[in-house]
Structure formats: C-alpha cells, structure tokens
Image 1 (tube, rainbow, N blue to C red):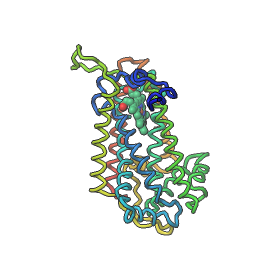
Image 2: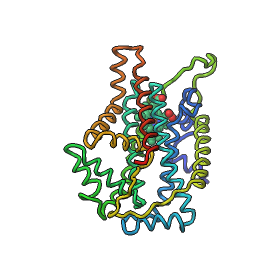
Image 3: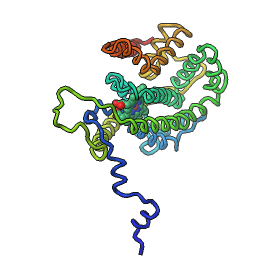
Image 4: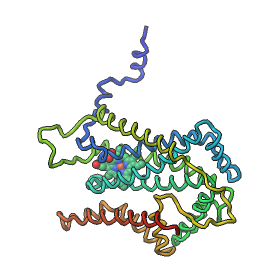
Amino acid sequence: MTTPVAWLRERLPISGDDLRSLTNEPVPNHLKHWWFCLGGTPLYLFGVQIVTGILLAFYYESSPASAYASVRYISEEAAFGWFIRSVHKWAATLMVAAVVLHQMRVFFTGSYRKPREINWLIGMCLLLCTLVLGFTGYSLVYEQLSYWGATVGANIADSVPFVGGFAKTMLLAGDTYNERTLPRFYVLHAAVLPATTIGLIAIHIAIIRIQGVTELRFENEPKNKPAFFNLFPDHVLTELTIALVLMIVLSVLACVLPATMGPRADPLTTPEVIKPEWFFYVAFRWLKLFSGTTAVLSMGFVVFVMFVWPFIDARIRKSKPTSELSVWIGVLGALAILVLTVWEAAVEH
Ligand code: HEM
C-alpha cells in the first residue's frame, strides 16, 4: 500500500536536501542584531495588518451612511472587535516607524550602493505605499478628521500643476467629497494598496535573495569567528523572537491605549483644529511654512531626490571617494524631519 508520504513524494518530488539548500542561505553575522535586520519588522507588522484587516472587513461598511455606525459596532459590540481594531491601528503606526528606521539603517550603512540601487527604488515605493495605506485607513472611520483630512489631502493634490485637478477628481470620485468617495478609499485601502505592497515586498525580497545582504565588518569582531550564520533555523528564530515581542507590545498598546472614535463627519462644520496622524506632521508643517504650489512642488522635489539618492551618492563618491558628505546630508535630513515633526506636535495650529 502507498504511504501518504510516498503518495505526496510522487506528485511533489522535493527532497529534504532540496529544502535545506533552498533555506540554508548564509546570512552575514551583523543580522543577529535587531537594528540590522529591521526589514523583517515591517514585514511582520504588515502580516498583522492583513489578518486584522480581513477580520475588520467582515463588519465594516464603506457607505457614508453606515461607515461610522459600523466602526462603532466593531468597537463596542462585536466580540473582541475593539481589540482587533486597536491592534490594526497600532500595527499601522509601528509599521510606519519600522519602515523609516529600516530605511535609515540602509542609508547610514550605505547598503543602497551598487548593485542595490533597484532595491532602494522598490523600497521607496514601499515607503509611499505604507504612508498612503495610513492616509486611506484613517479616512475610513468617517469621523470629522477622516472627512476633513481626506478633503485637505485632495486639495493638496489639486495644487500640483497640470495633473493636480485630475488627481483630485480621481481621489474623490468627483470634484468634492461625495457618496462615492468613501467606497473608493476603501477599495484603495483594502485591495489596491495591499496587493501592490505584497507585489513590491515579493520583488524586494527576491532581489535580496539574488544579491545577498550587504556584508558589514566591524573592527571589534574576532577574526576567527565565522562571518555568516544560517537563515534557517538561526535567522528565522531571531525574527520569530522579534515577532513575539512585537505581539506583546501590540497587545499591551491595544489594551492600554485602545483606538477611539471622534465625532461623526459633518460636511457643514469645519473642525477648529485639523491634524493628520503623526507621520504626516512633517508634510503638514511644511505646507504651513510655504504656501500651496511652492510647498507641494518642493516636497515633490525632496521625494524625487530620495528616489534617485543612490545615483547622486555615486556621483559624489566618484568625484571625492573619501567624502563624508552623504552621511552629513542624511543626518541633516533626519534632523529636519525630527524638528518639523516635533514642531507640529507641539503647536495647536
Ligand atoms: C514594507 C516595507 C519593507 C520591507 C518589508 C522590507 C524588507 C526588507 C528585508 C527583510 C531586508 C533584509 C535585510 C534587513 O532585514 O534589513 C531588506 C533589505 C533592504 N531594504 Fe527593505 N523593506 C522595506 C522597505 C524598504 C525601504 C523604505 C527601503 C529604502 C528606501 C528599503 C531598502 C532596502 C535595501 C537597499 C535593502 C538591502 C540592504 C542590505 O543589503 O544590507 N527597504 N528589506
């Protein structure tokens, strides 16, 4: 009689050796430290977002007439709804922070340099997807800040020369916020952006597998120690430990600071203070410092420079191989983001 294992082997002729060689990718020693393997953190948090997002979608209704009530039902009546919603919200916040920290690690270790420029570009697309996921997510609750945040966002898009009007109409499904706007945000948030993010992550990781992770050597590292360790089970265990700690952190945050609800959207009353989520503070402060088109164009320019940074850096290093200019530009950029964020957080208007 054919055993189940033999039956399966006949159909899927994969041996233990094949699996071992697929997963035994050597990983440089520095990836034993959390700071250097930060890429796994947004990956795990994105997984949490997908699972909790699917659970929320069972109850959420995307029409303006019932969206707010459906979120209230999730928060107050559905079993563990408040917990799932709170974990979803906190995982979003931590994911933005983790993506930014991962990008900083890649920047300050120069790991975006040849041949990894393409993965930096993919990473920049992932950063934008993460931010737009956050923006569309906050719009779904249909509270005052959801409505007015979406309206402000569409008006910012409108101030881009030539394509702005079109972008605004596409985003709002009309010239102003209407009954088709919220379903459109929902399709973007729950289908288009997650699918795009999954595709980008797959390419990002495939490129990492092809190129390997940049090898960094430290002065205090003993010379006789092996410079690599195995992806499976060693690195996977590090990632699982991080995932466990993150699950505890998320659960504590969800219990101590659960997701709340502001007043229901009222298109006739503009709130006195409109503040986006903290990760948009930097852009919001910038928009207040420079008016309309100037602010939007200069922000677009900064994002463009971030995209093509590996090529700018290559130019700098070609003319001055020992120059530390790139590091100083990075330090200034990080400080500017920090100052603008804290400034916006500290003032009411
Ligand atoms: C959802 C967001 C992201 C995920 C899940 C992700 C995942 C990963 C993972 C797992 C690694 C392997 C090494 C490590 O753990 O650090 C990695 C490396 C890398 N990531 Fe990301 N990443 C994301 C966003 C970004 C962003 C925003 C950038 C930069 C703009 C970026 C650029 C890179 C580069 C260049 C490498 C190669 C680093 C090296 O060779 O040392 N990634 N990423």
